[in-house]
Amino acid sequence: MERTLQTSVDDWLRLVAGTGSELGTLLAQPPEEQGRRGHLHTLREITQQPYTWIETARNLVPRATELRSALGHVTSDDRPGFLALTGSGSSLYAGECLAPGLQRVLGIPVQGVASGELLTHPHGHLPRAAPSLVVSFARSGNSPESEAVLDALRGIPSCRHLVITCNRHGRLAARGTGDPAVTVVVLDDKTCDRSLVMTSSFTNMVLAGRLLAFTPEPKEYEARALRLAGLAAQVLIRHGDGLAAAARSRFRSAVYLGSGGRYGSAREAALKMLEMTSGRVMAFPETYLGLRHGPMAAVDEESLIVCFLSSDEVVRAYEADLVRELNRKGLGARKVLVGADVPGDLPSAGDLVVDVPGLRAVDDDDATLLDVLVGQTLALFRCMATGLRPDSPSDDGVISRVVESFEIHRRT
Image 1 (cartoon, rainbow, N blue to C red):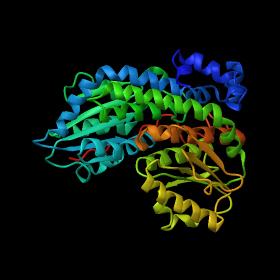
Image 2: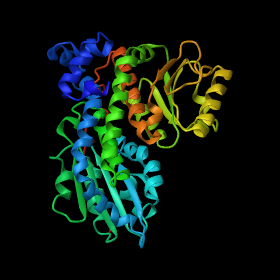
Image 3: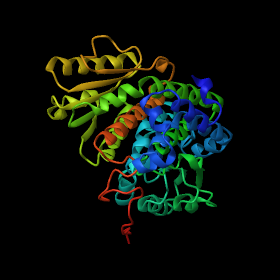
């Protein structure tokens, strides 16, 4: 499967278009028809992801030394510091996908922090004296708080910045250029999604952030990206039709379950369903162990339950116990179970198992990209089933591609 991805994005999309699958049939439509139906950008941006991951990894490997230098500000043995992963909405969830894995590898505190929190309560999240590296994720870099956080924290001498964005023309990228305290990483333009919702922007920024765990071994990072791309191709080609059918099934709400960094996946997948159905499907994320503590009250016979299953044996044991409890209580209209070697007693009649052989060969920290791909595909088909346009599902303009400007209040 990896071999089919090593030509170009357009070749890969033509390959999918020729499969006769539901995704393929949509991709085979003339661009004019796709534009008329309102899925021209979203469809391409979701489906192109396996190949763009390969490109992102290859483009970033030469910058591993530069990123290792940026990390040196907080990983010094003499004065270890704090790594904050920040953004708003999906960009925040990118940081949450990354935080547990980076903390495990780097051995320093790592936390996902909303940009808005850094604006309103900077000292509640950043240490006053210890060195800090703030990693800002942004698709466009034009959201009001993206620029404001960088400006507000520049006055803290112990703070350095790393910007990861998909838009070289965005204000955030421009703001950091030429400042020795700021390292700017701009991804390929094709990852700067034109659709209202973030899809390939999200996964490529997460993949870019994963390099922070591999700066001494950039070739291993590139090899992992290639393996992930092959697994993602399997998901799209082998399970796209199953996900389309699940998306059209009868449910009013959806709950997404994940552990560790995959709770970040659950947060992003739930947001995709909420955004792309314009709120018609109420979706929420939760951890497996957290669901019992109240949120299970919102799971009923009209709920879709999406389970991102860990490859870690102990974590999987806790997750399986919860799924069996849901089965015993008869909760959920149906489940979508994503993982490798899913036990036969976990699916009930009508459930979909997205079996991903080879998933155990990558970390749960890498699997976040595959989780989100599943969530995006479910949301795409549910959006179309409800008669909305994936490129602009919010017809009333309640949400927009870039958050509209608002006043930034400064402390005096």
